[in-house]
Image (cartoon, rainbow, N blue to C red; front, side):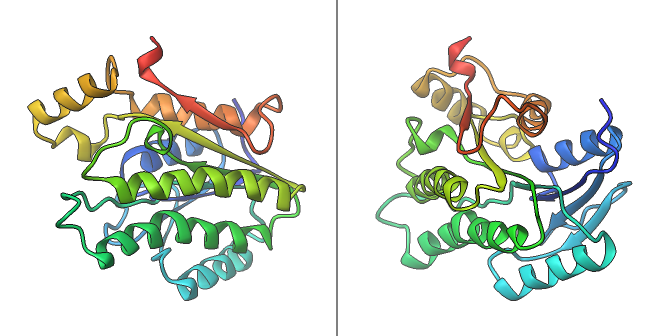
Length: 230
């Protein structure tokens, strides 16, 4: 697969799905800009940029940087997200709003400013099956943000017909964060939702690339990557 000539921006590229995707795309010849916030991306061959996507000023500066250095943007993958899991009665308004601010509002702003420099192109928003049916009582703010992201994806597909705007919704993925979770808790969660195994980061990354290159996947679609169906 040759993706040379494509300029691809990935948020949440310091670890997990974003980092894996960035490296695969770089290997395929794409020019990759990996966005990080608190954790600097080290020992990489692709371009990196520090940006807090909850701050509109940072996002404006990011896209000015892309215009100045790369002159165009072909693909945006919105992968940056946070979770602040805790019991319903312990969760504060500030915590709930912070999750929405990063996961949903930050993605909205990324799409808004990306669309201004993309004459044609592709946006992929990373949601979750939490948006549909794998809810957890300690992460209802996360689930709400991902449900909002699904709706945002479908609305933007209508508002920006010159762009292909899609989503992907995986269930539990074996990321660095998940690998550090309590083994018994994780086992119970997988059992609760009926997930047979953890998805691999590479599986999700390859599916995102398929969304990018496959014209049969249309704007407005949200592809569910579900290990429960195996």
